[in-house]
Length: 422
Image (cartoon, rainbow, N blue to C red; front, side):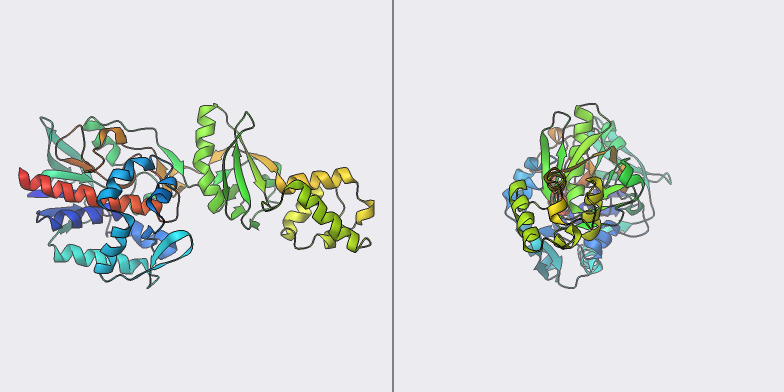
């Protein structure tokens, strides 16, 4: 068997790469080791598929803290707005939600997958599933073939590696492509989990006192051993039986990993500001005003609604404040201490859940060895990379899938063009 372009991996970047190669008139084969294509797409966005983000490109790059700047050249070729046009041409109407996130009007990820599969059919892209790849064959600095685990050899002028990273392994992302990249002479930077819950062995976590408690839009900060705030994200969070999770925590997770590595430490401080709209003095004045209006009221009732009740009572207990005490009998020192915890509740985390539990893989094939406008390897002729196998990672919210679709588009298009020149 011989093909102009062979794409390995049927996720977002692989599907886009196969379509882009097919548009160039190339004879394309798409291989996936799973039993169906688009599994990661089908579960993305909570099953609704957040296909991209409509924020300006500079903002999108800011939300891809892992080498997002590398994508500037790619965006000049195929942007987030081009992604929207692409899907609408396939009959997928999109709608914009909070923070620029774009979803199909159908609210069904499967409709996006089905549209992509239909386009593969239209372009006569051959598809093979349930076929794991064993290795890639290179000769004299040029790709030659794909060897399947079944022993079958597939000759190909160009190969696009789109097999993802190591996160969400049940969708097929089990890190297979890193060895193929190394075999071609590529550097694979250290892998680590990103967009992942954090773990803690603090007493209140181990006792599950706050398990299941959510905080609405607190400011969650990562603090390094020198006491400097590394990053702050103001989004929702939740306490769990093993630590903390939720959007703010997921965004902070990569910085926890980096601080642990940089300072060679096993614990990192997290600080939670549950009331970020006020400073400590403003909060103190507000509480004083509330209490003076009803001095005989128990402090628990005076502050009702200030914080979720479980969190309020936990902070009372932490600061040795009795729930039934009235304001005139409450010491100013204890009140100040309570307010400080409202604004700076600090505790330690000792790491993250494993990379298999992460939404996104940090690290991967070094972008220094990839042509930014083509996604072509600088080490091996005819080899292209796209998606999460690259050392590019962003926050959740449509940023990673945007990166996957953009790099997939460029990889497939240029693989198709290259194959027609040979």
